[in-house]
Length: 419
Ligand code: AMP
Ligand code: MG
Image (spheres, rainbow, N blue to C red):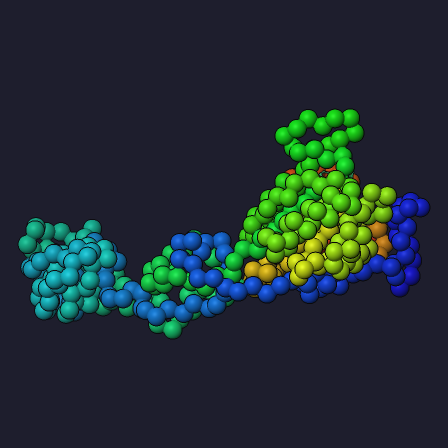
């Protein structure tokens, strides 16, 4: 492959110099450490990823019970029942949910029964109270019932040996319900990765301060920390670090002890203050890459004392997109998630989209579902500094490397920004 990309003299890169998105992601995945599972109480496991398959040891329901408030009967007693000639049966008792002293039933008798109460031995059917009439001790039935009606059968929800929750799944509140119902007290989970977030740049002030001349508030630090949290990991803010060798070295060195991954933003490109590769290289190993993507071309990968370090470009949109393309899959992999990538949809573009040659573009789009199909519309300007455009986006439309123009009505892949 040959050719040039870029829009200006300083931006010109030959296509051969670039690394593919997949190769860069693979290089990051190769740096990731293995983590050991931890046992957690089911209640504390929500949001974490299950480390091993959990299989049911029990049946649910554990005993046959009533699905309705009504009468437990022998179905064959009612085979001739009709509105004109109801069948009348004596009521020999009452069973509520939680009762353990259950009367037996013989043909010609019935028992008042509540939802969730055990079905008495001898009965095979529950008739809903609303369809009956009568007094306290005698009740009339007006139609026949198929045996088994309104009875919850043993094991119909869950049988012993059946999978409860599969390894690699992020545990949901519904999984917690299932695990609790099945009597699972503890579950093996992968611990959330600890991610140190460093925002580098001489121009940055904390978001709660008023910037002086030439300064800007640090948006990337809070953004990356929020993305990390959303990805199921635990962010630690390492604050703002000056474009200074000693400051960068100290920030990295002092944070490695409590990090499973370090994510830096800024200082990744070719400016005179872009010192991050040099500093990581001095402490450990580093590679810089020009990844064939837009936004987000300059990327840094490193490892110091077995801790992987990712350096994302400083432009907020570039940092955001790079996080989605590289860091989120890495964090999901570290957590042992089966679904490493977020879901994608095919959507029809509503306007002409353009993309530079040899690069994969990730364009911020809003999605709409109309008349059974998804459409994708640009959130507006695609400049890498336009933070408001990320907030508007539902997804990132992916324009492949060999496509430079997408006409309205064409289908593209859109990577969703929600799970
Ligand atoms: P850099 O990658 O350091 O060359 O930064 C590229 C652009 O992103 C510059 O306009 C920076 O001011 C901006 N930038 C870098 N870091 C941040 C940050 N933490 N928050 C907001 N903008 C940033
Ligand atoms: Mg900078």
